[in-house]
Image (cartoon, rainbow, N blue to C red; front, side, top):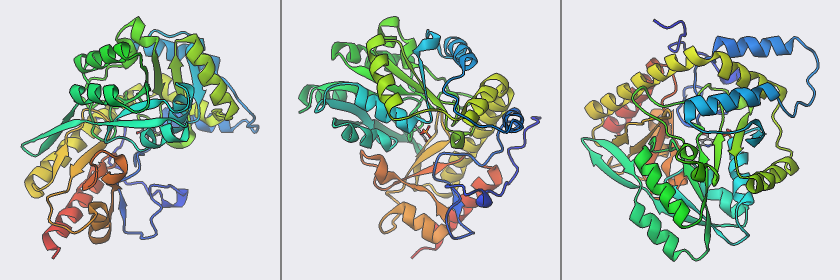
Length: 392
Ligand SMILES: Cc1ncc(COP(=O)(O)O)c(C=O)c1O
C-alpha cells in the first residue's frame, strides 16, 4: 500500500490548466505532458511554507540546489559535474533553443531523430541552423511497436547533409516513442559523435520517469570525453509533475560551450522563479518515495493500456514505453477518414496529440498521455473503442 492516492479524480478546470482548457466539459484530455496527480505532499508543504513570507523578489540562484544536483547527477545518473557546470532555466524548451543557438555558426546543421517532441524540429530554424532529420527504425510485433536507431541512415544523413552538421539533439528517454536508449545504442551514437565532431544536446527531462522495468542511461555518463561534448538537459518538471513551476537546468562541462550557452541564456532573461526553486528543492530532497510509487502506478497504467488495446482495438499498434507516460499509437489501419486525433476528439471526446506534428511519418499516429487515474484512462479507452465500433 502506498500513502499516495493516484486514483483520486481531481477537478482541474478552475485552475486554468492548459490540458483541461477545452470548452466541452465532457472532453477527456490526454494530450499535453502533465499528469492529473496531486504532487508530493512535501512539495505542497514547501511551497506553502515559502508563501508565508510575503516578499517574492528575484532569486537568481540556489547554491544548496547546485550541491544536491551535483550529488544526484553522480549517484543517480553517473555524471561527474561541478556546481558551476549547472545553468538553471525556467524550462527545457527554452534550453533546447539556447543549445541550438550556442552550437555552430549560422547555416550549420542540427541533427535529430524523428518522430520527436516538436521543439526539436523548430529550435534549429529559429537559431538560423539547418534541420537534418533521421527517422528512427520501427517494427511491430504482436501489436507492440518498437523503435530503434537506424545507424546507417544516421551516417548517410551526416555524409550527405547540405549544411555541415555540428549539433546532435538527442531525446533520451524519447518523446514520443518511449525508448530509454540502451548503453550499447548510446555508445554507438557516441562513437559517431566523436568521429563527426558533433556536440550532443541530450534532453533527459524524462530520465526519472523510467517504468519499473526501464533503465535510463545518461549520454554524458558514457565517458569523460563524451561528457565534455555534451549539454545535458534535466528538470524535475515531468517526474514530479511541476512543469507549471518552471525549473530546469543544463549541465555543461566544456568551459567554452558553457560560457557561450550561459551568455545566451542570461541575455534572454532565463531565470527560475522563487517557487520553481522551492518546488524543485523539495522534489529532489523529499519526493523520492512519491516518485517510486508513481513509477509503479504508471507502469500499471501502461500495462492496462497495452492490454486494453490488444484485446479491444487490435487494429492499433502501440509502443510499450520504457520511460515517460506517453504512448504512441499507430492509427493508420483504422479505416477512418482523415486525422485520427480529430476523429477521437469529435467522436470519442478524447483529446490526443496529433502525431503529424512530431515529424518523420507521424501522420496517422496519435500520442496518448496515460499520466492520469486509471479509471479515467479506462473511460477514455472505452470511448475510443466505442467510437471505432460505431463509426460509419
Ligand atoms: C523531451 C521534452 N523536452 C522538453 C519538454 C518541455 O520542457 P519545459 O516544460 O521545461 O519547457 C518536454 C515536455 O513534454 C519534453 O517532453
